[in-house]
Length: 134
Image (cartoon, rainbow, N blue to C red; front, side):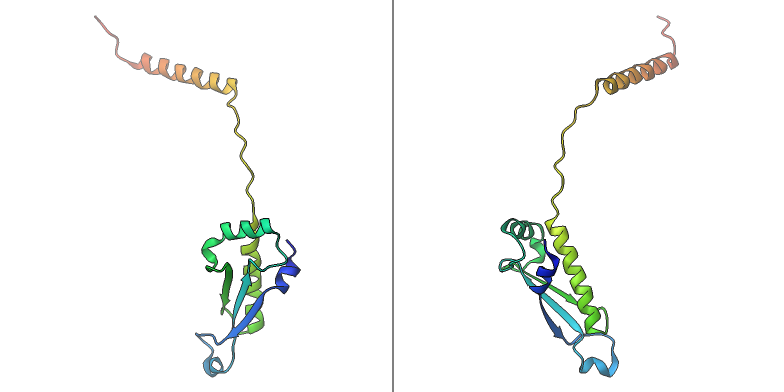
């Protein structure tokens, strides 16, 4: 994954943000909306596109477009930085392939120890019983 190439494919849109800001909120577009089209990306291989569409399917639209918003800060530049970091994190998690678990066999010594401990506990409990006087 080439992050610079992917970042160059992102499209940003500045929108008027809701929330605090006083009189400034009515004239400054500080909210940033990021869009990324997975299907038309040149930076991702076909395998990576398939991985992304399966792993982050809940975040994608029906056209496989990822849309992220950020209005945490009053500054448009800071919001853009925040949304790009969030985007890269989502992409890295989406491209992560977990290791395949190898099935292992339980060692014979461990099985013997467990059975020996069971017998020992059984003997202890039998010695605690009341004697049978029949």
